[in-house]
Image 1 (cartoon, one colour):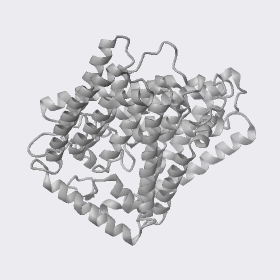
Image 2 (cartoon, one colour; image 1 turned 45 degrees about the vertical axis):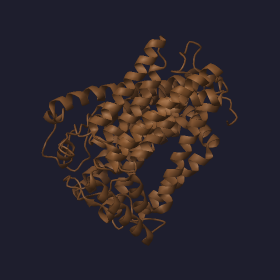
Image 3 (spheres, helix red, strand yellow; image 1 turned 30 degrees about the vertical axis):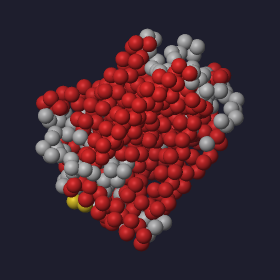
Image 4 (tube, helix red, strand yellow; image 1 turned 90 degrees about the vertical axis):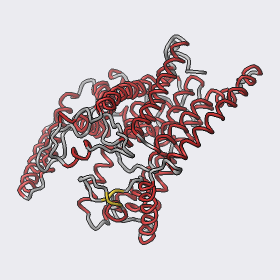
Length: 525
């Protein structure tokens, strides 16, 4: 474990108020007005050329001014911290329970929905924190110093993505997709760092995901019962993206549920994460019976959601995560040398039953993935994508062809109406877009997070073990999904979990981050 650094108080009265760069001072005010006028002129010119997206620039600038005016000069730190935490939580819950295709579509502009507004708010808070919050800079700085390897991997990954976008044949499109990826998904690492600054906030993150998990489950039940998308009556069916989101993605004559998500696979991916988070929340309940019953119910709900989604990758991911969760108490007892003779005998019989169940599960998953019940057309398409992807990347192995270019270069016909081609693997997309090094860096930093989380589970403080085990299992399950899924919808969760793992709470011996004495024991501890 890295040595703990002294943690400054975060109360607004304890620190010298930070002067807002947008409030007070004639020189500052002059540059604010001048900058806004310049942005307005540039926006007007570009709008006349048909580039309507630039409208968001002055609007965002005005929003930042209002935030600065609200925070002001007094109690700036406490106000910023409160707003930053609220923006994080709003971004998470809205991204889970609000369908992205239920939005306002203005000509020439990106869709306007709840999670996009929440995302703009969060990005504004990150920019503000970088300029004016000592607390924010201290948390990010501590993470970078204590987890250098992860941050180096992340920065190199961003560098390769940026350089590949700059060298793309279609620079405008590639740059737009790069910016979207950075400010919607990768920046969520900072979201995890913010919520990981305190144990209670980290647990609140799990609660928010758990609430979203339950909401998505009941939406899925309704959708499965009526046999169509629940939100089809609230959207404009003329939009191409909406048409794709509402299309029935059936397989073998079976309807595939997608709940609040745009695709059954992204729904199943979230289910694998939400089930673990909900099991952790159940472990915090007072009564032992409720903890066991709640954990079992949430586990069954997660399995049901993956089955409703008809995701073969989901079957495999759930099998892996369920296996890890089942044997987690045994692993915890062994690592902490708390395995008694009586418990050893009990676990011997339990392992026989567990291994038998896993054998049947493995055969079932193999049958659906590669056996008689496999969807051969999908398997063949993915094999073609991999073959094309490797061959194409060999011609540009270091920089690739630009962010978002993989589908057109190595994809197969999508039939979605949104794009002509699709690449059903995030690894292949990164490889073709930005070269071999980019995909290796993404995989390396993800695997480092998995090992780091499991290490904290079995070597860190005993009060935290299930929390970190669930984080590691969630990241691992998402890595499994990325083999057959290139959609970015849930990547903000992946990067948020990364941020949690490298946040200050990772130092479980830090007294500021220890859970209160009234905290409940972990499930099956």
